[in-house]
Amino acid sequence: MGSHLVVASVLLLMLPSAGFTEQSRPSYVLDIVPILSENCVGCHSIKNKMSGLRLDTYKGLMEGGKRGPSIVIGTKLESPIYLMVTGKMEPQMPFSSEPLGQVEIDLLGHWIDAGAPGPDGGELAANTEQKRLPKIEPTTKLKSQIFSLSYHPEGHLLAIGRHGGINLIDTTTGHLIAQFDGLTDIARAVAFSPDGKLVAIGGGYAQQSGDVRIWDITKRREILQIEGHADTIQALAFSPDQKILATASYDKDIRLWNTTSGEELQTLRDHIDAVYSLAFTSDGNRLISGSADRSIKIWDPNNGERLYTLSEPIDGINSIAVHPSGKRVSAGGHDRTIRVWELGEKNGKMSKTLIAHQSAILHVVYSPDGKKIATTAADRTIKIFDAETLDELATLDNQSDWVMALAFSPDGGHLAAGRFDGSLSIYDSKNYLDTFQTVGIARKSP
Image 1: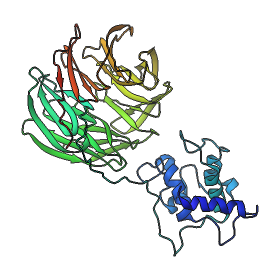
Image 2: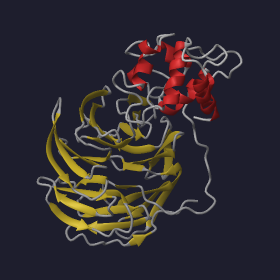
Image 3: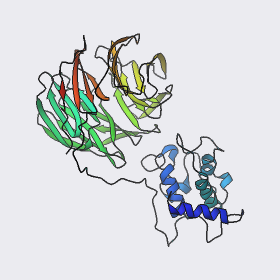
Image 4: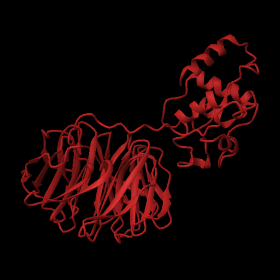
């Protein structure tokens, strides 16, 4: 919290139990802003206005949200924000995080009891914005990494996400066909449009901005750049009619964009942690998201309504996969378990579970015919399962590094695996022999 908190804690010990004097009462700018910035505005700001509450400005703090005022001036024991951080009112805040320390709680309480004064003329008027990290250029060449893969709908090209953009390679020869550059940082997500004419790439700088680029494959040129998230892009997906591009970010938001104009159509907010995975159902009537908040959410992309939530996982979700029928979704994450739900109109029903790996599952994907599920994990294995029974069909162990990206070819005949060390394999789907032993396909970072 900084030196001012140390000073404040000393003052707390020195002052009588009646509270702060006028001269020593907590300052909104020096004492309260750092507490809110560090613990609260990730969920309550202009970008993530959960429960209709903004805590990134003094005005927002005083106005409160959908549940009414957050502060009763002069009375901490009647102020919801104080009662929530002390655990005397549900839900306890900060949500899914470490509770505030006693020094911070005391500062907040004394500030409220002192009348919750805002910034005065001698202080800098401050918005409680989250801290942004400066861009730091590497001094040496970085290790090559593959974070994302996507097959062209015709199967003859494979897009490989790397630092600064993607490489398009011929899947039979391994020859580089094209490379698209200009993306901010690592391409953490890549997807071809259903007609194969476009490819979307997502990246961005941590805690600063998301960066999405859409390229025309034939003309080899960028046709659209989208910026709208407050953190890195973690997933993206085209709708089946390719009129919508859905993006998900570490900032907890899901956004829907017009793929022609780049106009933002909807912002979907209900997750309380990073959203790592997105997929449309085959009919385009549902968008499904998986998050580090341990939930999978089903949305109506036409109006942005959250239809229902699947919340059985006991730890964060890293990846989801929608069955080709659109009636089933599988997910995997930190609890090492594959879970499969049958999707209904108003709810989902758990149908199968399996503790599949020894470490966190990194990626889950269905084969195009829906008969297999392939997974990767931090235990450096790839596993293939029967989609109906979850019986294990094959294990590709001793991977050289984490397999961060996994993709079946459109005909189901091959399985591509991209690793953290920059190596790429393309396995045949019958005997799972590596037919494409290429290391370092991803271009090294500049």
